[in-house]
Image: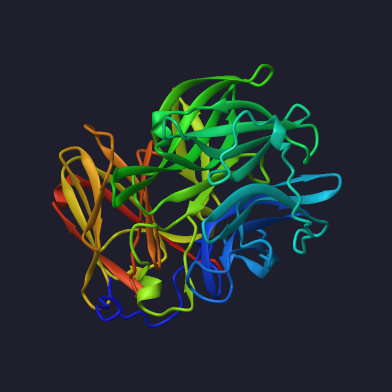
Length: 446
């Protein structure tokens, strides 16, 4: 979009009420969440100076409930020798909190990515000497231009590091797995891939365990043609033997069938549930925050709890938002608060338009030929599965986003949209096919 073609007239800096964002600046990939010293610490790619992706640092903020955040700070910043503190993850041991990151150097025709770490006792102020924590000679192959996004996973006395890389000969992404008994001196263990589902380059791999199986979430870059790339996010359910370093793929699927969902990471909640959060935006278009000259740009998806049911990955919203529901009622055609929740049960084809206070249709949600689609800004995202019986939708609405959980988390569709409106109303078409439409109002101050 061009600067002189503004289709929105955003009146304030309000882009989120319960999705993570920053008061000012740019954010992209989440770089880890951890429950530490009785609160959550969230880390993220951060430019505190402007709403563009420059001067990339890692930021940190604090939350007690994953709904409200404060104490925004720069955890680690680049130097004259290091051009970018790029994506990574967070872990802890007896020494404190360890922030594992990609050390990025890029000058003229030279580019190198490696892995370093910072350490903190309070979870806010970090120190690093920028030394590599991987024993490079243990790597059978090292592509310094594509070696990034380290993720730390701990099991049975070992720290495992997943690093995004690629097989240059096959031009396919792969995930390198390293191992150490401490959070330093990681040595090569085995590889997941190269795989076709990793595209031409895999990014932001993260792993967690549910029962006896492992869930690997990741994003990938796939060349469509010379001037076009596809950026998507997917998952694998794996059976892994960590004694010998072998794996088998049990299931592959899209994590969210939207272009507005990238760079996922996994973390454990205070209740020990496996949860996911991602950057809720896209590299494929100019963010509206920039088009409209806002001081901040970017939000994260609302946290999702993961489970495996009958071999399928299930995603459900973290229950924190449900505890803030103050009132529920059957929708009556009136205006409702923009940051509301909807529960919809439909038995056949129907359409719901989300309309702002100026009578503009901001997003269209269509259930047609057994598939659900979301249309906003002339772009359409469509569900993968067909739903031949009743379809149940849980819709999380915020000031600049919609997240739809289909049939109790079997699938999700998420879109960044810009209501620029404190209230919205719903235009429900083919009402006879809508069995139920319930609105839940939330009060984050309650």
